[in-house]
Length: 355
Image (cartoon, rainbow, N blue to C red; front, top):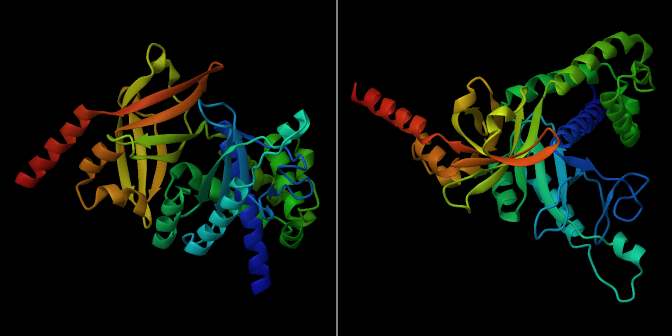
């Protein structure tokens, strides 16, 4: 494969991953925003900044209003690299985010239509990575208020990404790379409809049609199998210790357990990855139901500081705020760390040390 072909394939891979992230965000209540020619350009769906228009990989407005805040607009970058996301990617995103967030002004004698056109948003920046982030990227993002969402070692998304690669192998890479916006829309339509006629298109070479159909069906099935996709907030014992995470599960949240209350206890297990920690959250009263998320290393090391993981869990994972919609009713559920289970883990650890 030539350098040019590798670049084209990476471009298609990136576009495909962006579409998948947008689909996952939509499952969690982030609505796609319509190109209006004012905030979002119609020709390429770039977002208006103070100095120029910016290409935002995943743009969504949170469906529900919050007190004392303008509507939340999530501006996201999504990268599917073989290795970690590095500092230059975060630095470029921060520049675009600040330019967009500063593009608000007020003029006298504005008409009602003009006032609507300059509707303000609470702009939030988040960077999604199929792998992880370099240490420099993590430090810079933390300093600039950009939240990092890592899928490193997430078992729910691993199969989706594997299927994505099979789909890409069946595409006309050159055409998909040269027509990024059209390809992105075509891919989105294929994911949200059951019309196999859409599979037949200009991005699938005829000899690969059968391979594409099988690979895409697997991708769609694995994406549809994700029953829980929600941006939640992990909160420590001190309210200032909090961080958004993307909770994923192939199971639905057992809302029947929340019929008479809004909170449950949970246990949490972890595995160490190259760039951070991957967590498995399991409600104590619903053993067998699992929620998965990952944290970049620098994010948790600020609070961990070499102490035992049990101490870290108690301080940093005190509870999880989980917004869900159940039977048409919007609720914010709370998962509290099971202190009894935690003390049992401490006791078992002491016993092993004494042996």
